[in-house]
Image 1 (cartoon, helix red, strand yellow):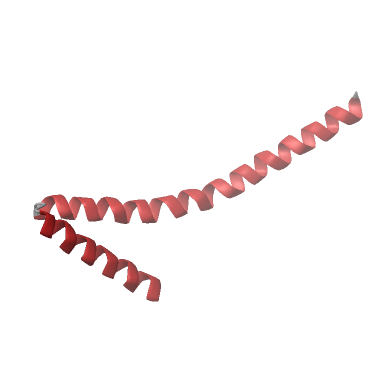
Image 2 (cartoon, one colour; image 1 turned 45 degrees about the vertical axis):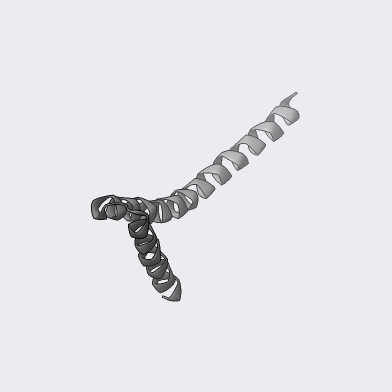
Length: 71
């Protein structure tokens, strides 16, 4: 909960900073949406990648063990 509020506060401050630099409102909104999407997609993709990597890692180890036993 606190993390979400902090994140929103950072986005608002970033928006004000960009506005002071002379960015247009539409450009700021697009930038904030892009940053928000990155913060949402990256953790989800990492969370999805870890089990896949573990699965392939374990499968690879099992293959190596079988290969060493057979030869």
